[in-house]
Image (cartoon, rainbow, N blue to C red; front, side, top):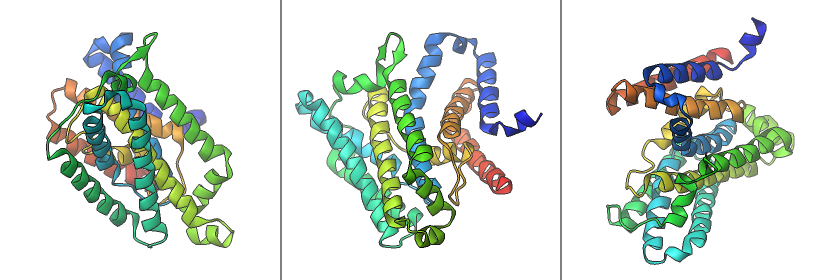
Length: 305
C-alpha cells in the first residue's frame, strides 16, 4: 500500500485513460495506431518539458503557442521558394525560439515584470508578426525534408519520438544532475534566499525561458511535419503545456516538478482528448474538460504541498 501511495498519481491516471481508450476502440491495441498516437503527442511532450523549467523557476510562459505558429508560417514562406534551405531554416527556427525566450527572461528578470504579463505581451507580438508575414492566411509549403522529423519513422519507430527522448534526457540531466538544476529549484522555492546564497537569479530565469522558447521551436518543427501549415497551428498549446506540467506534479508557485511525470501528464492529456474524440465530444466540451483538469490539478498540488 505504501508503494502505491508513493507512485505519482499521473501514472495511474494515464493508465486508466489508456485502458478506457483501448476498451472504447480496440484498434489502439495495435502497434501502428499506438505509435501514431505517440507521434501526435510529441509536440506537446516537448513543449510541456520546456514549460516545466519555467514553472519550477516560479513563472509561466504563455507565448509558446504563438511562437509555434510563427515558426511554422515563417518556415513555410522561406522554404516555398528555396526548399534546399531546410537545415538553415531549422537552425533559424531554433534561434528564434532562443531569442524569444531570452527576451521573455530579460523582461521578467531585469524589468521585474510578472511572467504572466510579459509572456502575454510576447504572445500578442508573435501572433501579430505571424499574421503580418503570412498576410493572415497559410501560405507557402513545407518540403518533405522538413516534414521528415514530424511524420517519418525508422524501422517503424517515429522520428518524433526519438527527438522527444533526446530532449527529455537533456532536460532530466539539467534538472537533476547539474548545479543549474539545483539553483532552478532554489529560485522557484525562494528567490530571495537563493539570491542571498549567491545564486544568479536573473541568469537562471533567463536560461529557463530560453529553454522554453527552444522547446516551442522544436515542437513547431514536429507539429509542422505532422500537420502542415496553419495560421492556428499553435493555438491553445500554451495552456495544454501548463496543464500537462501541473498534471505531472509541477507546483505553479515554483520549486517543484520533475521531467518524467510531466511527460506522463502530456501523454495523459493527449490520450484524454483522443478518448473524448472517440466518445464524440465536440471541441467546446473538450475545452471545458481541459479547464476542469487545470483547476483540479492545481487544487490537488496546493493541498499536497
